[in-house]
Amino acid sequence: MTGLKVSNLSYHYGAKIALNEVSFELKTGEFCALLGPNGAGKSTLFNLLTRLFVSPNGHIEIAGHDLSRSPRKALAQLGIVFQQTTLDLDLTVRQNLSYFAALHGISGADATRRIDASLDRLGMLERADEKARTLNGGHKRRAEIARALIHNPMVLLLDEPTVGLDAAARASITSHVHDLTADGTTILWATHLTDEVRDDDRLIILHQAHILADGTARDISGKAPLQSRFLDLTAAPV
Amino acid sequence: MSAYLTSLRAIVTREALRFIHQRERFIAALVRPLIWLLVFAAGFRAALGLSIIPPYQTYITYETYIVPGLCGMILLFNGMQSSLSLVYDREMGSMKLLLTSPLPRWWLLFCKLLGSTIISVLQAYAFLAIAAAFGITMPAIGYVTVLPALVVAGVMLGALGLLLSSFIKQLENFAGVMNFVIFPMFFLSSALYPLWKMAESSKLLYTICALNPFTHAVELIRFALYASFNGPAFLWTVLVTIMFTAAALWGYNPARTGISRRG
Image (cartoon, rainbow over all chains, first blue to last red; front, side, top):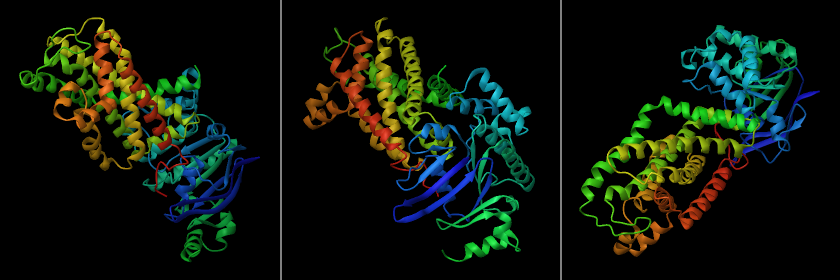
């Protein structure tokens, strides 16, 4: 089964092309790193996948639901961690997660059970009643990932979720998210940091609105370190 | 509870919590009309003679005349404040969380609108209570009949805030709203002086005031405070609410523009 399918997706900001005929398909339970330098089009792709933007060109399918024809069914299967922190800092972690659960129509005992399970999964249950403002960067991110999982989405999108975090927090979050594929969650992880990509991961390199490479990280990097291969690929104009 | 009601309750609660966390906002919202009522009105009382016009059946003091306009002022400022917080939400990213919910976008925006209207109406009642404490009272039944009028006017001004927030891209641009929306709407209305006074000065200004939807919101509140129903003001307010809401929904349509232009 397909977790996420993108076909011939293009987007323009006026005359500037942000995405050009981008196509890829992720299997259920697959972890895919979307690697690209700043300005490659990663955030535009995420805005299209989350329907914050709509493109007249191309198709997006989330867990078998066409995003333009059945947006509600498609978005119900989508968990999102945005690049910016979107926690309400004046609320506790639990209040933040309850608010999100309600936006997905989940309330009462069901919401409490799911919130506890989700926080526990990310090792954040003991911080449930702390105000978001008091959390460090890594814990804020974990709370946001827990929040994105409350409604058991089939697909999880993370837009550069480790920006601004120290090395230990980055490694911990990368590891947590890799573990999520075990229960069949499809993951698209946008980043510009090659050390977050494991050899076995599916890797898509996006550069100047085009897909430059698509395969496993091991195949794409070959014998060279991924970092230098990535720099070589993105050095030349498309 | 259905998903719709669950989300409505959550969004309204969040608006209320945000308001409670901003105590200065509540105080400012009350102090502003009270200064108009207790200082401006006292100074103006002698300068401005008022004739008996509906819904009043006797001569009234100037303070009594401007109470509905000041209720409107609270709703107007609060509508703009909620617009400001929507722009802030968008800059901070939390708007994305709302707009990526699987519920229809029109419903989510309606919940936001309702949440801000409830806050506005509570502030207007707090103002009416303080005015009453200073001896400026309305008929007892008026405090009940004004509720639907405050809600309708609050929704209209909230919808205007929603519309503005869909077009204002940055917080810095918000100062313009003060100059080009709040002040003209307030001063070119019947909030501070009856329209016949304006007609004596300038026919053009009178026409602008008569077309200003804020005038009709104020008149709706004024009549409701005396347990009277102003049909034309009600229709005008509802019509403008529909127009503002439709335009705001168009403004928030993802096919028209992205929420964030950062790529």
